[in-house]
Length: 183
Image 1 (cartoon, one colour):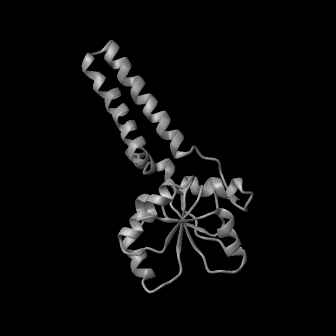
Image 2: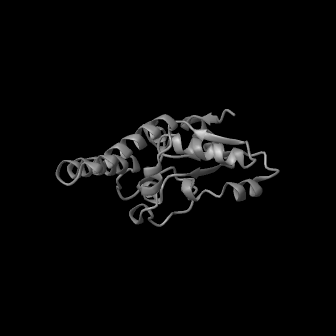
Image 3: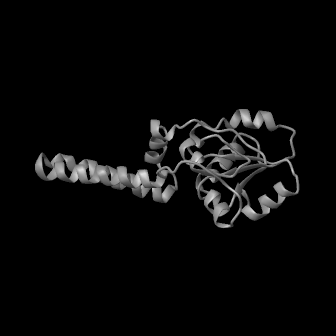
């Protein structure tokens, strides 16, 4: 099933026209607090209650818009909601980065480290640690960098990252979620 998309400018025009828009940002609360579209409600992807969203929207003809950093997690959220039975979901192309790059208004908060960057640091640290343990402790430690490398290949092929999902659950990525503010 193909997921519908909308450009940030098109969605912003709908908001300016006074249309009732429900926009869910599926990034971590820390990412959301750093920068977000003002009318977006934060529900992290790993906490997204697809079935309750579907039951709340049954009979509604209004689309549900989803946004993340660049569009990948929002696409996953769209697929999750569509599989639960609500197919009128729309992914915002380019995510919050695309929205910001288009010069559209955003709310900015404290700067945080992106989840992508955290994954790169964690993967690099585990590969380095495994390599050093292999060189100086025992050759069986080669399993650690091999496992991480396999995981990175799998993440690239499937466009889903288990390490990223685990890091999203860490306390530093669990900042207090804000609610939607309309302007």
